[in-house]
Length: 426
Image 1 (cartoon, rainbow, N blue to C red):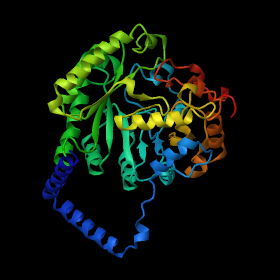
Image 2 (cartoon, rainbow, N blue to C red):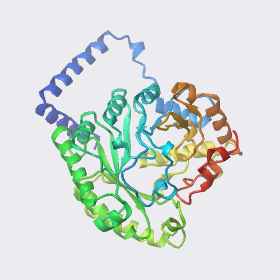
Image 3 (tube, rainbow, N blue to C red):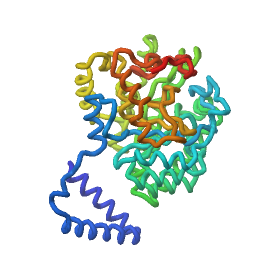
């Protein structure tokens, strides 16, 4: 199987090189340069050092306060403006203060680059729509030039041909479009301000750019949809799975809604009375995927059951074993492990808000540093981050972590998270 995959990849690269003389000469030059380096490099220098991700995982097993590794996941909240008003979004319920809206400045982003490592992930989003930032392409290129994987969620409304071509040119790794419906009527009722036809027209534009200038629909960027399951849209999940397959997309992520209001509480699919309905339509979605498997044998359908409570993220099949081993290791430490509201984000995540303030995750409003006056590494191993890690690895978890609505999975939002001034000191 690996040989077949390698041959297919080799043939695709050859086809791309045949279409582009510049790519052909660039690849040929790289090959020759690589041979010269191997000939003139002492064998002692060819010892492969552990990647940052491997080093970080090892440190997560020990939970030190000061890390040798850099964060494998960096969030850059480059924009907090949004051009839609989706009903399940926290900002639609709680509002957004004027002082909390803005664009990240280039000099703040540039300070983040000292955290970038080959194979690390840059999540270019936060509380707004990423593609509204006028310097998005600069940020993308800067990260990819340093070997980072780049991904983010988007409503797709601001996507245009220039941005689509840049995503393909710089080989952005993935993009996830928000689409919590299988029909135009439901989509426009949920994603208020958005148009169903406009979203799918933009998705088609990006796929076309991948076909003409990249490695085809299976190449970069990988396109996902995100479906926030709710009582009045769950019936349309099978329709969306079918559409995603027919439109040659790469996968679909299904997440539970966070109840930011009493109205959204009624929409939750992970409460006892709604679970049978959820399971019915999840089963139908899987059936549609299997029925249309020939369109994309590797179509990635992820349901809420593959949620990782230690990292607050989806995990793929390759990560399940690692998560279980890590959880067993952490459970040997007092106050740690999945059953103790343990979270390893303070050892893995660096969340930079648009104004330069830094947090250990997307949930808390606590500030652990300021990129306007500090370097990223000073913050990462600074006193505030150390205090936060110390509390997390103890039985006395931080104030906001005890109220996290993403543990063990999306549930009810606690309004006490809003005001950081009311958080207890670390």
